[in-house]
Image (cartoon, rainbow, N blue to C red; front, side, top):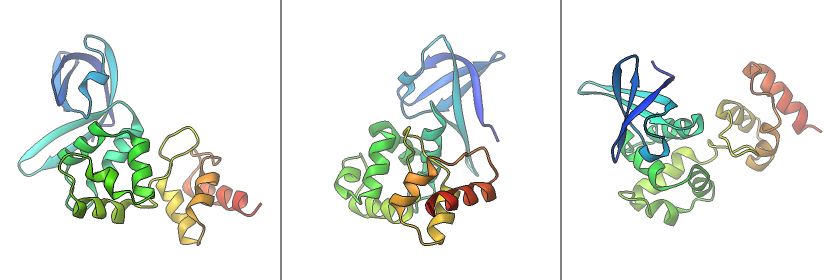
Length: 182
């Protein structure tokens, strides 16, 4: 499994880039290829999509973008190409906000998203995507743990952004509980 590539972007097309690393060009599908600068060294965060008939690389400019992509492809009936379309046509904040507010109209404005799929996205992801104060997607494992204790999403959102994410999950939970009990 690849985490990221750091190399020179040699070509940009409508739905993918080619990144050259030590003389090998990798085709990487991305939501917005023009976000990367051609002929410059860039870091591309990756997801390697392997199926019986396909082995594709999907690339993202940020780890948050990749994290949201991974959550989207877990939604029943939503594949990698559709998740890429969602990220290409909307901002991370817009998508997370639409899911949290159950804004079906916002999701239906995305090409190829009908009411049924919009409802499925909300059903599968509501409460599982939490944005921190600096607009990054925070550890959903910690969020799920706190939800299992019965805390409300707004309280969790306020506390999770203050927790040191470099700690092991057990310590993150202890720190979050300490902050919630204040």
